[in-house]
Amino acid sequence: MTDKPSIAVVGVGAIGGAMAAALGDAGHQPLLCVRTPFERLSRRFDGETRTYTHRVCTSPGELRPADWVVLCTKAHQIEGAADWLHCLIGPHTRVAVMQNGVDHIERVSAYVSPERVVPCIIFLPSKLEAPGVVEQARAGRVQVPEGEIGQALAELFGNQPAIRIVLTAGFVSTVWSKLVSNAVGGAICALAIRPLKSVAAPEVRELATRLMAEIMRVGEAEGACFPDNFIDKTLDNYRGPTGEHWTSIAVDRRDGRPMEWQARNAVVGEIGRRHGIPTPLNDALTALLAVSDAPPE
Image 1 (tube, one colour):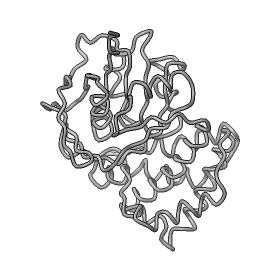
Image 2 (image 1 turned 180 degrees about the vertical axis):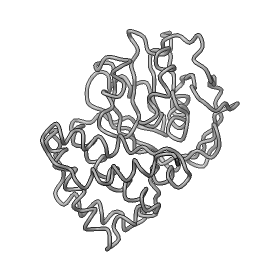
Image 3 (image 1 turned 180 degrees about the horizontal axis):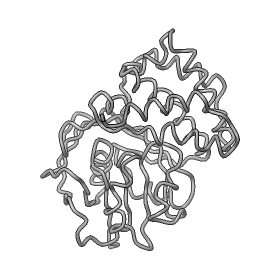
């Protein structure tokens, strides 16, 4: 019988907890790397609560490199995870970066070579009720680029029903489509401290439309293609049930936690400047988010 690969999940919040539970359903026993200790991981999904006996670790200590690292911290928390990554990533370790944004590979370039990184687009409605206690509203989907390493990640998660890994041919277009939504919806909602429906409000729709078009131009320079009427369809979607959703960045601002504006908005300006594409609206929102995020003097 072939030995199971060793897996470490770094960052066991709503996303990391759901990932660790799905890996448990697939027959693995991942190591859970956390700041706040808890006794057992539990996940409620599809009317059932399951408890897992995964080992919980609060200090890198003498940990050895794992076969896989599933990185589920927020994008701005990479530096805080550095000690874990230095210990867990060896010459053959593969890293699944399960974060927002488009620069997944660049974020972990100090720890692992690009060919061993799987950038992931997460569609997973889950929330952390308490340390180690995850509520998953419905089955999640993780889109990854087509190729051998993406296939290997899909095989790691197996056929369990909670999270499906989807190999995606047009990954660049997909990841930029999500970034447009995250950058616009996240920034406006975080600054207004309101749910997504505020983005489609008559007073804001013109700003949102121009901001989306600005970011799409940068995505197109990176090779992304967007569907017809992408802007109108996205904004109209926010007027339905989706509009009641609070983005994670808005929740973080509401609750006084650091926000993820660097991977959602600052990165757009950085990439735009590389292509000579001005992004004045996005840059203005980035500046406002940065000021809002700064600790009081």
